[in-house]
Length: 258
Image 1 (cartoon, rainbow, N blue to C red):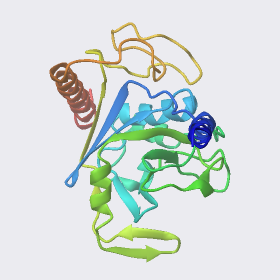
Image 2: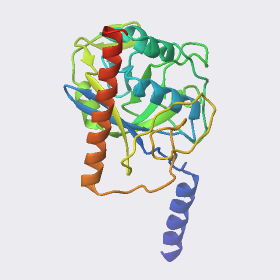
Image 3: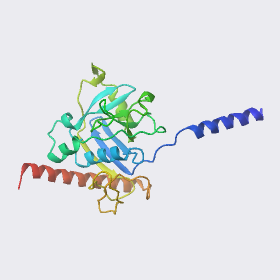
Image 4: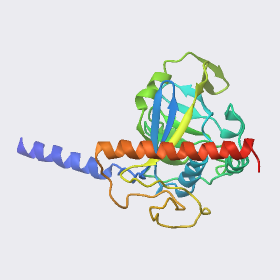
């Protein structure tokens, strides 16, 4: 009996050892607001540095505001539309410039398509990803090593499951909600820090954030990772207020040139 128990323990240990460890999650958190609730996610900068930086830059310039989730396939994916053509408001020049950029395929055998991860959309060319991405509603091992996984949902999976209850229609391979699932507002904050992070440098540059809001990449696990709930809420509020201020300035420059 003891031998059997030992064998069971040894087997469990072997399974645990074989299981892939979770990738390090960035401290940056992006929030997409919808009428069904907020969807929040973070990035895997060590797994997909180019893609994580690209999506974060699109968020930081407000490109996803006014966009929508065009695909909701129950138990599979909820997919965000490409910002070029997906928004109900025109892109400004900066957003357009970022929106047409492409990113390469970035894959790792130990990072798999499981419920909650973010997977970059693309066409046949593996390096054709732009701004559309899927939020996994269930495991999809057939996508492993074929599509870039660049982050995961940290809050709001319940919101995505609400979307699975919407009435849908099929267009080719896509299962699409009949009602537009609008992303009415977006913002981001940095967990555990009162400072915001922006991407001011070119792809491939490396610079540590100095707390002044200037950096070229999404950070990984360096620094403090915990904070009181009140401080976290304060950081979220500050980040959103600053983002809204920047968005107002962009609109003002567009509408009142000179």
